[in-house]
Amino acid sequence: MPASWLRRATSAGLFGALLALGCRTPRQVHPTREYPPIKLDSREVNGVVVDARAPEPDPTVRQLTLPAAFDPKVQERLAGLASGKGPPLGVIVTVLVADEEPIVDARGEMTRIRVRLELEVKLRSGLVLRRANTESRSDLPPDEATPEEVAFVLDATAIDAFDRYFADPDVLTALNRELAAQSAKD
Image 1: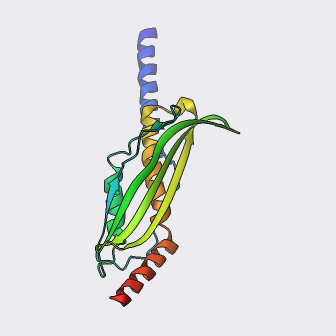
Image 2 (image 1 turned 180 degrees about the horizontal axis):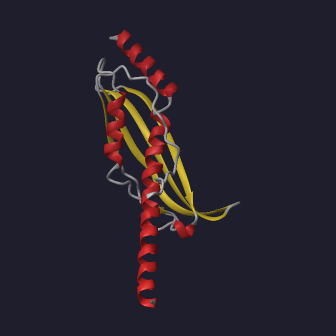
Image 3 (image 1 turned 90 degrees about the horizontal axis):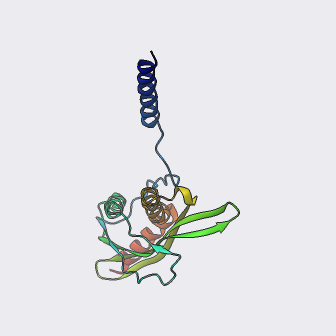
């Protein structure tokens, strides 16, 4: 009896653990930023992600590399902003900061994941319509800051930094005003 009971209990425990994992809700680091229904007066919007950071001089700060999935996400979001009419736009996304550093605040010791991007929106002629910086950060307890969790949080934090700018209806409206002003000059 004890051996068969132990096997059944172990099997039931494993099944319960797998079921619990399967029923988990997806992790969410930042609230999803919904893009407004505003489209840019541009037939296409393309982007390029550039990471030309110098090595970090502070040994307590560890530079991180944005995940390969970041570029396709940026391209998809930018393509979705195009109305199909107007001059093509280019967006240069420059990584200024993508790092992990230990901090201490009212919560105690934490690991901070921070991403800061410079965005440059320009016409094919080279005329810069807008340049802006955007940033997002997330904090983890140090015992949760495994390489896998840091990579997951970095991915979510990087796209949140991007979305903070391009999901803002005021930004899209202002870009359309600038595009209209340029069209009036031509």
